[in-house]
Amino acid sequence: QIPHIHSLPPDTQKAKSSSFPPTKSEPMRTSIRRVFVAPNPLPRTFSVFRRLMATTSTERSGAQAVSAATAAGDSQALSGVDPGVMESLDLAQAAQTEIFYASTRLPLDQASTLPPEVYHRKEIIPVEKARVWEASWTCVGITSQLARHGDTIHRQVGSQGVIITRDKKGKLHAFMNVCRHRGAQLVRKDGRYPILSCKYHRWGYSLDGKLVAAPLFSYKDEDAEAILSDENFDPTKHLACDSLKDAFERKDFDKADFPLIRVRMDTLGHMIFVNIDGKAPPLAEYLGASEPDGGLPRQISEHLQTLCNVDPKSDNGLVSVRQKRVNSDANWKLLVENFIEYYHLPSVHPSLCAVSGVDDHHRAQASGNHIGFITQPISAGGTPLDPNVLPHFKGLGDANNQTAWFHAIFPNVFYFLLPHSVFTVIVSPDYAAVETDRGSGVTDVAGFSIEHLDLSVSKEALDMPDSEAKIEEMWNFYDHTNDEDIDICQTVQKGIRSQGYKGGRYSFRFEETIHRYQNMYIDHMIGCPRVVPGDGRLEPGASRFIYKNES
Image (cartoon, rainbow, N blue to C red; front, side, top):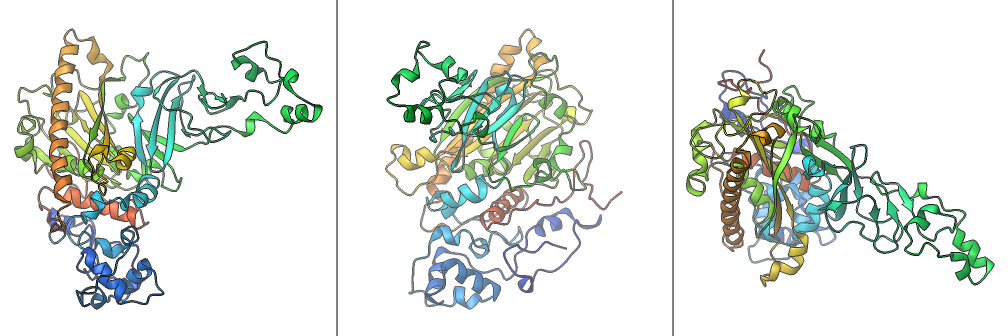
């Protein structure tokens, strides 16, 4: 049975039932068509919602009006109104309703891409912050970048600032980036810190979040005295009366009651994820591990032996060898969508085709909130990414030694996982740039993003005599390819603001991945996230898809 669209009542579900996944004899493309089916598909333009407001009771909000019309299947309320009636509807409100995305919910061969407003209108940002970034598992960093105790990074996730630390025992922690005293931002620069010290009043926290110093909250507080600049300072001499001294001592204050505010955190291989609202399913379940096909974790299970190991003392671990931060004048969704389709390879990345030929790409879509495909076999085209350039990760079987995995995990991380290396891109909106428009003078653009790039290899690769030169060539290849992607995405960012553009159509062969990703986005925007089913699994080395109901 095809799952019902979440925000519509059951009696409005008109989609035909069918078995899922398909049987052996049923072609794969049929299963792709059936992944997302919306009942009563209705026309979608922004003007539709303005008309809707004019034809419903003024006592209803825009969201209530849309829900009422959708539940009743009232296409007349949406398309039969006098076109001259143009009442304004709040875009942020409309973007939280199923009907706003009706044409994207259609089967792949009928569907259109997301409404262009979600890529360039500032009104979308607060909705995305709450329903996408804070409600999902968002990638915030790479474990090998926090290999030593004291290593600390800070990131913005939706409306919340987050700190990731590694303590003296080697354990990772995630906290809100706020001091428990007066609410000052605690960490403003990535670095290595023995203690997290607030610049405002010098409250100090250990790397596992404990409050260890609150200066002058008690003149008997040894921790406070230890961080005072004047070791001979006697606070009692500066108290005007006994009542002030009693207040100063704060007998009711216990540092154990004021640790840093923890954030839900988990890892997959080399990637660190946080879930701000605490309501998402466990990360493994979010990525499909609880489904019969095992999801993404099963697909890269052989790689995890290396990806999970960032111990500097280990001989078989992962080492981050290059990092870079890149600014992009393109919306974050465009950057992810560009990665998950290879339709553009011949025109934008002709050199990449020597590594990953278009005809060698195969779908490998398991269950979970991710997109997956592979290149098999990896081409040996004389490029810096050729399969034998560096030693392969330990524990790979014959199939994975000639396979490149490509995954994009919703909402914001994607990677190239080759037998000898992993190139990871973490994408996030640049909200500060949105406020300032980076000097562009355009006031309605929400298209500024940040990419954090990382290239990691096995520690064994560093022992090769010419490893540094090979790693540099590999990095330059990836960096150049990423620059090409950013450049083309920035042209899209400019183009989608055109008044006549209302969305495009999907290439059936190459862009089903985007259709899947955009429907995950819709699930979150309407407040109904779910673990998206896969349509089968492709085991490395297999010549065809193996569906769940096959032995």
